[in-house]
Length: 119
Image 1 (cartoon, rainbow, N blue to C red):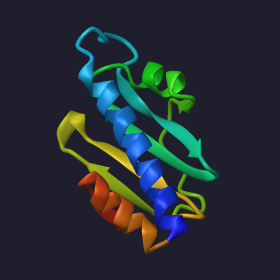
Image 2 (cartoon, one colour; image 1 turned 90 degrees about the vertical axis):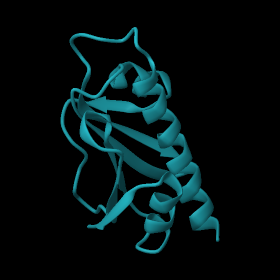
Image 3 (cartoon, rainbow, N blue to C red; image 1 turned 30 degrees about the vertical axis):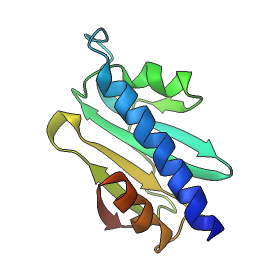
Image 4 (cartoon, helix red, strand yellow; image 1 turned 120 degrees about the horizontal axis):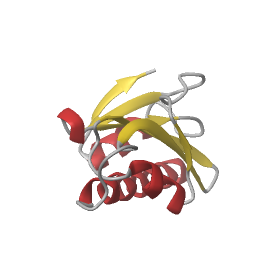
């Protein structure tokens, strides 16, 4: 049950981050979308990937929430699965890594209202 709590905590953190990124109409122009944010919470690492054109300022929101920004996508190395939330340029994809596993990952994805893809 502890693994699920960590997965839900990480998912909730990332949902907040993604929502914060897309909610600001004042963040526009260069630097919108097209990268990823890696966050570690209580020993659980997740990475949220934003499509090019994602509204708001995901890079600034990432770093202000203590995440690490990259101009590229999330690593596929050791990834348990991915959760895609939303559609179009407002969509984001969360990659889950151990200790989250093939049971807790889909549960966290469901909590976020996303679609799970293993691997």
